[in-house]
Image (cartoon, rainbow, N blue to C red; front, side, top):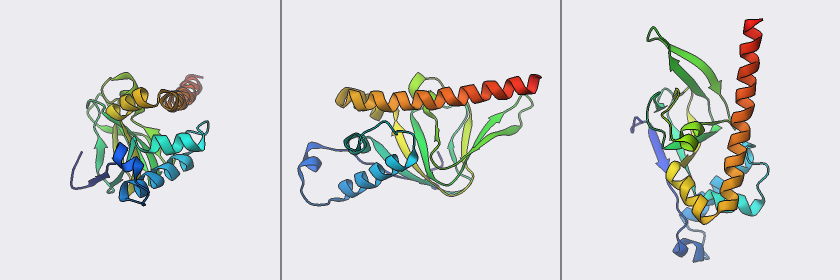
Length: 179
């Protein structure tokens, strides 16, 4: 990632942070992440307490328009959910030209395939506008699986359902092109 365009606020819930009664910065950040998770629409099956617990595993990043978020073929170490802005999904064709496959908007997840299956990125993602993103790292997902397996299972299931819907739509588009 181009570090001059990519700013990230990372948060972790340590036992010391959880015991504080004051509204510390990590707590405010966790509350913002919780609200963004609730707003994105991907995790409708989570309970309010689940969102609060999950928020400690996500981070927020701000991406400048035109900045590459990740590149096709890179190792996948995180996924994103768009809070604001648009992201262009791009692939390189056989002639070496960049083809825009899709433009994603608020509420859409991307990069989850590499986080779930450990394979390399299947496409590049570039900020088509100024973006605010929720990020979930592969390591954070593993930690969530150990610390809060029921919540992690709900999140993974929601991502699988989202991927399944996209695959069905792509199958339908392929079929309609062949008719």
